[in-house]
Image (tube, rainbow, N blue to C red):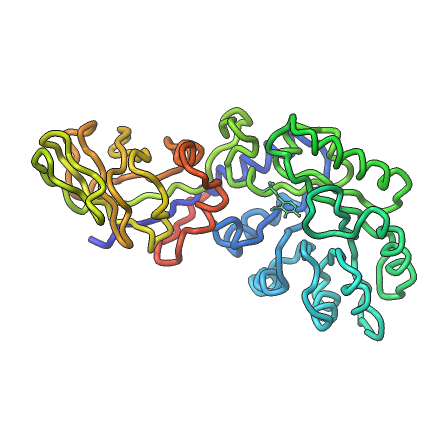
Length: 361
Ligand SMILES: Cc1ncc(COP(=O)(O)O)c(C=O)c1O
C-alpha cells in the first residue's frame, strides 16, 4: 500500500467552470490565469486541458510561458507581470508572448533592442491596487513610447487589476472602475479589468477581455459565498487515507506539543498527509475532513507527514479508508472558514510528493 496522499483533478469540472465563466461574460475573450503552477493544479496539464476553450493563458514569468510552449501549447500566452530583464523581450517576441508593460524601466529596455517579430503589448495602470502599474498620469506617456516603437504591434491593450473585487460592495471597486473607465474611453486597443470575482459580480468591469483565475479551479471568488452559488465545481480533491486507528484513553494527548487532550475514551485516526505535503500546519484543530463521506475533524497539530483526526463521528472507520481534506463533498471554503488563509494559498501549497491524477473528461 503506497502512502496515499493524492490530488485528484477533475478535467470535467475544469471545463464546466470555463463554461460558467463564458455564461457570466458571454463572447468575451478570456486570458485564463495559469500562473503559479495553475494555482497549484499543474501548469502544463491544466493548460493542455484549457487550451482549446480559452483565448490566451496568463503566466507570471517567462519560465512559465516557455514551459507551456515546450509541451506544445500554441495559443497566445500573456506575461502578466511583463519581463524582468531586457533579454526576455527578445524571447517574448520570438515565442509570440504578449507582454504587459507596467514600469518606465521596461520601456527603457525597448530602446536599442532589435526584435525579430513585433510584440503584442499591454499597458498596466494602477487604478488603486497600489502594486504594479503606471499611474493614470503616466499612462499617456507609456502609450506614446509604445506607439512610437516599431517593434510593438498596434493597437496596445490597457489593463488594470482590482484590489477588492472579492468584496463587491467595497468602495474601492467604484474608484478603480471610474479611473479605468476614464482612461478606457478613448483607448483604441483592448481593455481588461475583471478577475474572477468581477466577472461574476460586476458586469460593468468586463470591457473587452476577461482574466479569470481562481474561479476556473472551482473556488468561490467572492468572500462569504460558496462556489455552488456561482455553479462552480472544485477541480482539486485532496485525498489520503487512514494509516492508524486507535482507541485512546480519556486525558491522553495527541500530537506535538500535547495541544489536544481526549475528553473521553475515543478513536483517534492518523492520516498520511502533513505540512510536508502542503496540508498546512496553521490549519487549526477542528478543521473538517471527510472519512467515508462522514464529516470528522482534525485534532492537535499537523505534523510533517501526518495528522490526527477525531473518529467519534465515524465508528466503522478502519486503516486504509479514504479521507478527503478538501474538494468534492468538502469545499475548500469550509476548510479556510476559521483561518486567516485563502484558498489560493492552500492550493498553491500542495507539494510535488502528492501524486497528481487527472480524471478523463
Ligand atoms: C493581473 C491579474 N489578473 C487576473 C488575476 C486572476 O485573479 P482571480 O484569481 O481573482 O480571478 C490575477 C491573479 O492574481 C492577476 O494577478
